[in-house]
Length: 377
Image 1 (cartoon, rainbow, N blue to C red):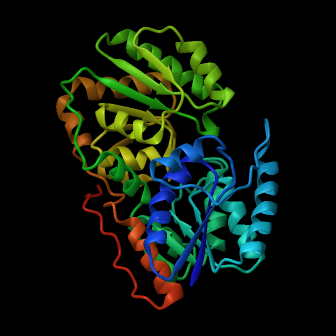
Image 2: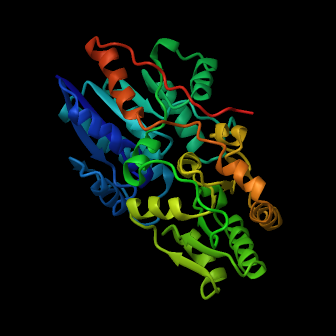
Image 3: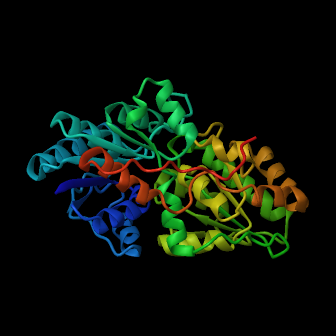
């Protein structure tokens, strides 16, 4: 029996790991255990419930105004204790959070192999996104099994000297989760009354960048009486404060707490444009035919930019407003983005990940790699 412990701490991690956990539970000869570190203490159980899952252990690492250093130490210590108690054969971590890096290091200290889901993404800028870029790099160099979502991610790993034998191109599990909730792709109708969705929370955008984004949204709705905006406001006061100060009471702007994942996925499917700095949403929206304006200067997900499904616009209000106008005033430009396709997955990434683990630890067959149908420019 192969004992697999999956560790995550934030809502996006939980959503993207849920299809993997489900596939592990259905796989004979595998025992699946789940640890939530509690980085998003209230949001993670909500996200898991959409998939009928729960964590076997909640480590409750977060305290008020906790620093990244304190979070790192708490995750490292508490995961170390759990691993010593449960004695897993492999630990799965996901993505680029503090939980990812710290749990991988805790597994390394007790000499347990690590599998890194969503390995190989890079901006090649140490502090953008911060601290996620370095969290992901460190986790990749601790891991023995590298579950890369795309060809480009796999190439990044090989360029850093990681053995190709341990790299598996799986597609992204976020697409598995999305399609589980909303079904197949359906492009929004650009002739319908435009609902624009906004979600921004990255650490590098806290402070003045978030305020600039809010000013851009204010200008968009004042310039375009047909536009309605829904902003899913992250609970971090450094996000919520500037957003609510600028936009509370603004006509045709709805500010809401982060919806449950299934509701959020359906909101995206009904929208015509997404403005975000979220990495996961850059993957999910193209799978729905939803054009994305990325509120960052760089991205570790360049495949969607290259195929034309997303566009980097940064946080300058003039650039954001111009990009929105370009798409809403030019149906052909909008259609090119909406129909660009998704390079990130086909809904079967979790199956490939389980097959990769069976290949590595149970002498199963090596999985065939995910092949994107999206043409990169």
